[in-house]
Image 1 (cartoon, rainbow, N blue to C red):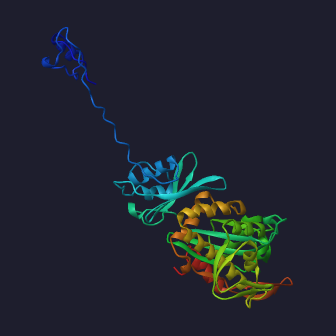
Image 2 (cartoon, helix red, strand yellow):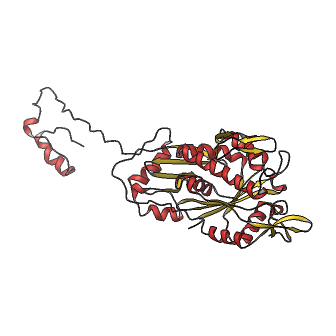
Length: 387
């Protein structure tokens, strides 16, 4: 702050009162009785802080992205926090693009910048829950391997999803490299149920709910499962319609009991046709084994759609699925599971059904799992088939 011009006798008083005050030189003093002059000063405007910008993204989210890229405390936990602690900050803000939505009412965001991908969930503030940042020296996902059970209930629209048998069971494995494999389990597999007794594996759902299915599959396979995703007929149709139909490239014409379900080449399967495709087994030579294989193919088609849509579309797809899926996975787990499609092309993901022999137990036709099934299960324990 500059002091006003003072007469000569005031200079010493001014210096004593404020050592940092600058007194004007005598030649600059106005003459007694003369006109008063005012010295003009030019105000210096501080440069605005450098920040990451992204069209359509909220300011608080961009604040977290600024800390991530330019240095600062980034809200994160566990392995993600440990990985980001080793990052190398940039000297200039990168260009970012992304989208914001919700999963089960919780705000989520996916933000991309070049080859970087950031996954965020909002509580009181935005937190980074996964991703990879080669531009910062963090090239692999810090999220641990996941193995998730996809459950397709036989429930019709007027039935509770958990009250009916689970006619579609698939273990989806994910590691730091992306989706590591899909393993289908025949619905008639004869196994000990976690709730007690021995029965077809699809009976685990009505006898104890989805958690009973998870425990039963985990004990049968030896694969440690992190949780489940479950839907029924109504939810499946609604989910497929919500994403605008499933883009499925069929290697050959696929005929069902009532006509062609998919032509050779590209098909856009809406809700009901997609459900018919997933349930068809009577026209297949290998029956339920072939049906399980086709269900895995539809999952891969969904992964291909999400990958083709890019990171910005992932939030849209998850939001569309959210009302039609029951799960015990956290929002962070679902977001990382969805983003795994950007780590590995679905074309490289193995889709297998565990083999078994056909037998009879308690007067019903069942599938008896043998050494071939156990070998595949062992291979899946690290979340990746053939690795």
